[in-house]
Image (tube, rainbow, N blue to C red):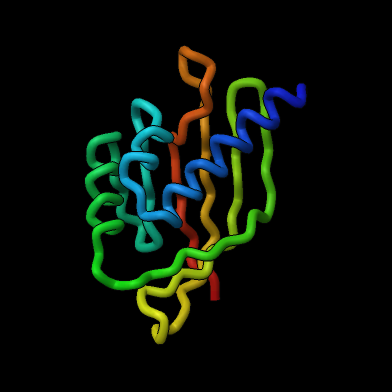
Amino acid sequence: MSTATTSAFRAALDEHLGALQARDAGRFAATLGDDVAVVDGGGAVTRGTDAVLRSHAEWFASPDPWRFDYEIVLTRETASSGLAVIDVTYRQTPDAAPARFLLSLVFERDAAGTFKFVYDQNTARG
């Protein structure tokens, strides 16, 4: 595996996570692949780039001062795809009890060779 492949995936991952923390729908949209699927912690599936972008834009626009803090637990990369498992602590408000979950993110290279986000799986932690 080349360093260029590794750094391209990591740059895409960092940009995606940065867009989430910044609540920036435009930045987030730029990280999305053509056919995205998100499975939330309750098992509901949101499929399609437009649907995922809409749901995240609504979340980003929330008046609550939520926090999305994370630690990357592991990454796996190939020339065509990347996987990250992330330990997330989420608070809807500063005084709210934290929600902990593992977030698995999958990225694939598009036709232009850019890593794009295509799949998100949330798994609740105790």
